[in-house]
Image (cartoon, rainbow, N blue to C red; front, side):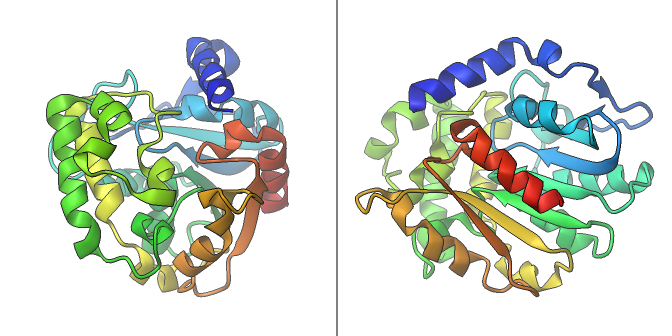
Length: 295
């Protein structure tokens, strides 16, 4: 499966412009934090990729939805081939969420839906919490408001912050390959949630400083206290396995615990046979879940 995902992503990146068809940069919106391309017509849908990924991970999803939605494909500057610009300085996540909110306001989008993968799911939750009434619904894809909760619901910031510092240093000074090949030797064995934090599949690289800072923030940000502020309905999509020997067999309980503080109960969509890159691992099942989410 891992080789299939790598092959798909490589193809998507190589032909991203062609595959995206008439996708175009959003005229009139300039940002040193994000790049946004639009495609299609219909109700607005914002797609946000995960850590070290660009909008290319949504290629197949965009191809299906462009005929019935106006898609806004977000990429974070400093990921992939995008120059970091303003993201080269200071914290990343809060500022990027602010730019997505500004994008919604300046283009006067009518209560868009948002789908975010991994880090993008955290950004989607933050935008919904910060802009009650401006977002119609949210889907998070293999994302948690506090990623260490995918290891244990009792995990605390104090538990993970030392590991996050090591991860920051590894990427900033040694490069992302240090996480791919030497994570365990650096004390980065995080058990069942490790693929959600350090998956090499979908990792398109980018600016070393931006990657290090964003990774540190993804590992240490705890949005659970913000969940009651979200008025929009939330759908939580995640990979799952019936094999009791797989860490993914525990996903149901872990994701339900992570989202327990939402104002209204989330809809949980487990995708059997998928790991972190759900939309690439099981595109048919994922797209069926997206159709239910948008119905």
